[in-house]
Image 1 (cartoon, rainbow, N blue to C red):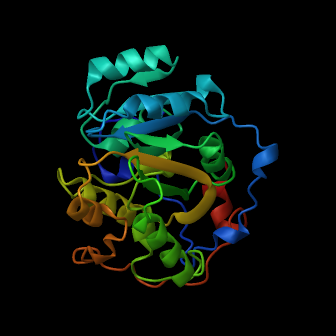
Image 2: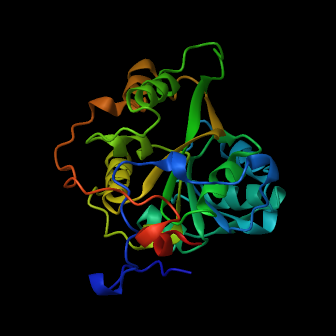
Amino acid sequence: MPSASPPAADSQRTPPPARVPQNLWTEIDAPALARFSPSTAVVVHLAGPDPDGLCERTLAALAAQRYPSELVTVVADPALAADALAAAAERHSLRLAAPACDDPARAAASAGELVLFLAAGALPEPHCLAAHARWHETVSDAVTVGRSRRRDAAEPDQGDGEAAALETFLEATRSLTERRADLFRVAAHDNVAARSQLLAALGPPRAGADPERWRLDLAYRLEQAGCVFVPESAAESTHHYRQPSFLAPQAAADQRTRSLIPLQGFPARPAAGACTAPGAGAGAAGRAR
């Protein structure tokens, strides 16, 4: 497994995969979810904090996944209460690993082959892990983007601006198959998965302690590494929250369309030539599992 410690020099990093500039994820022949038998070790990184105390519900949902339990490990954000989390993990028979370094991506990458980023309090549907993993067992440079929904526990019928923003973005980019300078934004949130080897090959984060900026920076660096963004509607997760932890102004700022986050500092990569279809030609070696 990749080391959690940053490489000493660029030459020691795993070479990034071949670029697919037009993001033709539709050419990837992933197995049908109903026939998929997972074999990849998954580490779920739980991001804190958990002001509503719903993290145990997340662990219960992970324990109920239709995924081999021996292949699932949880790495928790230091902002989460370690003792309470350890007790909850034991109750739900989940393997819990301590972060190996400060960078969440590298910490999670040291514990499994595939990393799924979730927020504490999120409730992934039973097929969520498998829906992500089926793409990563087919190609090595995918970044799968699941569907995240927010629900106010007191007002379950309240509209979900975050989910609506994702659908608008997918429509505007023809389900991510139309290249645009800010395509990487689609992965700047939770319920996103990437292979550990890909994460370990990235340079150190530039965003400091700001979680929003960190997610945006990680998504940008994945895009620059040449990954393929794959929208996966079957990888669903719902985050039930209780007021007043998300007051109206906070909820508005937290919506995934931080489409208002400036792109300053995230220049578009140079236009590349014709892309290589996944699993074919020069890119095949980089994508073979």
